[in-house]
Image (cartoon, rainbow, N blue to C red; front, side):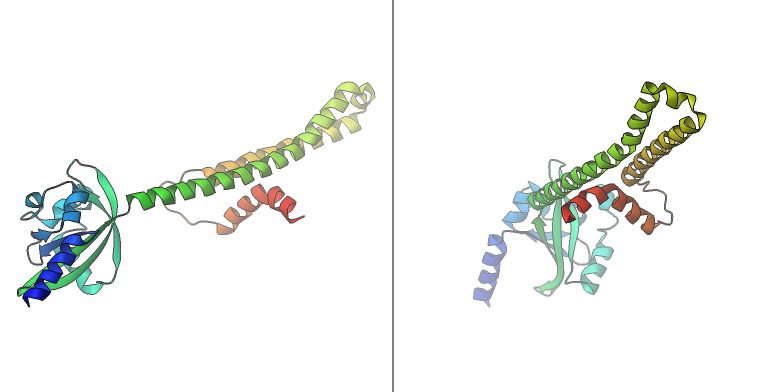
Length: 232
């Protein structure tokens, strides 16, 4: 039994992830390993004896109420939670938390394993940003193509009207050219409108039905020149 306890203590202290043990009924921290001290920037004496809720930002206090966390580990002990940890200096970092119930010396406890995922989150954000820039480049190519299509009749017909006096005198020809110019300007306006709709920020406080077909059509029309060119 002593050998088993010693083995457990070695594994507990040598673990790379932060481990915290708390009393299941009170939420009071009864033990933690060195990795937990390192990640929080606190000494063991600053953690043991405190409520486990101190590990989480104030805005997450309700979610990490002792009864809520106890229910979570009872009903979904295999789940890993994405959450945040507040450090001694007030900095908040993203962590993954694996909670489970254990019994130590006849005492019902909660064990939380905390993994700092700050670097992984940074890498994910860089990949997302890279993907966004690639998408933006493709959209810019498509938009430039669409604008060129709009400008061709505007520039062409306006130059003809400026240079050809006879065309200006013929009302039928003049009206026809002006209509073409107006149509091209309207097409350019639609391109700008699609772009604004595509990038308009969502209002997190208001919800409404989304026309998914419209979103797909808008994205398709903006990127069509690019993927058509690649397909040909």
